[in-house]
Length: 174
Image (cartoon, rainbow, N blue to C red; front, side, top):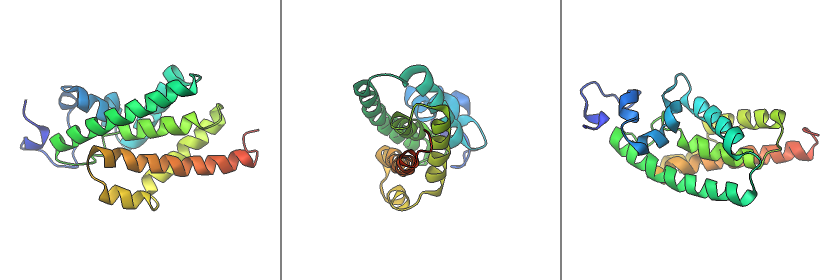
């Protein structure tokens, strides 16, 4: 099968068809099992998908299990986003949302296990992921490939966790 970027109608900002995404396991992962195909705001859909996966599969698991899942998912994401970005001809296509999935799992892991706290964490993560304050913007612009795609969302997660720590310290979720 030809790469999507070589098709006559291809535009780097275009959304690839589901048939292209679901043709290859790396693409399926990079596109968050299809959640990155949803429009508008694929990153928000990917983050919502991450939240669903968290509630169903990860919430309440031992810290060692969650840490292992995060490390493995990050590594897989580096490969999936590298290969998918190369096939698309765009290193960080908006539909590639596995970076949001893994980074938001990190946020949820360290957020109080309450719906209100998770909702605030969701909003904070999306704001920081979209705004890309420094050094997020720096790394987003300079670190390429799958690792770069994954890394900038980890920084957005760190900003979200910093704000969540302040809110918890102030008793916002007591």
